[in-house]
Image 1 (tube, rainbow, N blue to C red):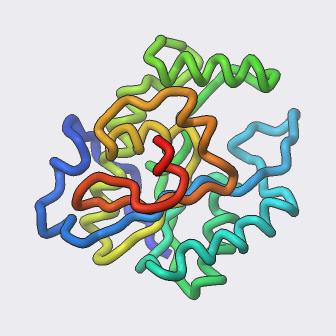
Image 2 (cartoon, rainbow, N blue to C red):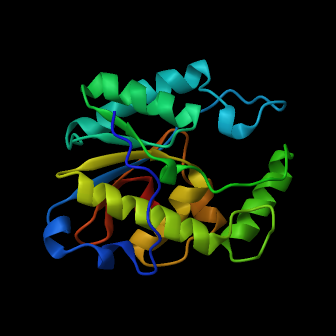
Length: 209
């Protein structure tokens, strides 16, 4: 299991950080973890997959078979790691963990679904909220992490992460700010295939953005 640590800071777009040869013909599977078991008394970063989430993750493997990744990289959160391991077993693909793939931190305790959605929407639309990891810090973290992974790994790769940070990353890859409507359209589990050379969505949920 590979573990290169936390991504370096990045001040420019991901596609500008890598040499053309590092991007030519390369694709990235971006995956949101499957449905966790919601436990109000447990921090969300410790939630594990619900039984239906485990079944859905296994079905998701079919989306990756045609362009099988060289490795699946995952956040360390249990729901993401479990999703990655299910995919890895189904595809006979190695797994690696990376701290930089963690969710945008949010320190406000357990909220109602409506209040949580409102706070996330405001964050993605640029409003400052001290409960969140600042948007620009999250952007630099995920961009640095993906640049590091791309340099480390040849060929196509897969990343298993979380809804808020994937929304930030997709805004970077697609070259435009994405708000709450995009975040809400990422299912659990969710899959999209990105052409890294051209910064376009080839398949999956990001085709809607």
